[in-house]
Length: 85
Ligand SMILES: [Zn+2]
Image 1 (cartoon, rainbow, N blue to C red):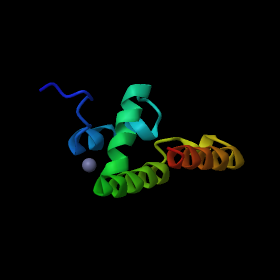
Image 2: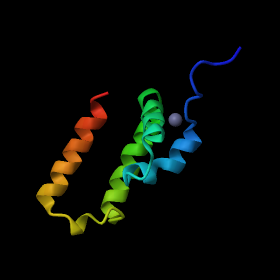
Image 3: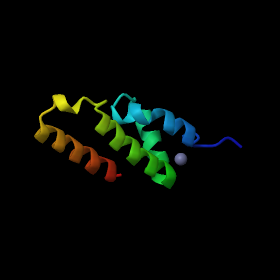
Image 4: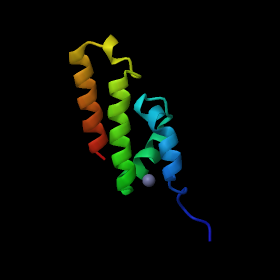
């Protein structure tokens, strides 16, 4: 039997890709697979939320270079978009 759908991303793969995802460096197909995994894996969702906050706090996104209003709008758009699926 050949599976119709590609195998879902593993937890290990997701962990490896979190920073790339948060910094928007993943190609669209990888982003979709990332979100597909998040949608079905609670522990990874918790991990992702923590990592996203950590990356934001440590400044890897260089948000200090972005106007706060713009940053807040971007963060909100990201959340809305993430929750829209
Ligand atoms: Zn997982």
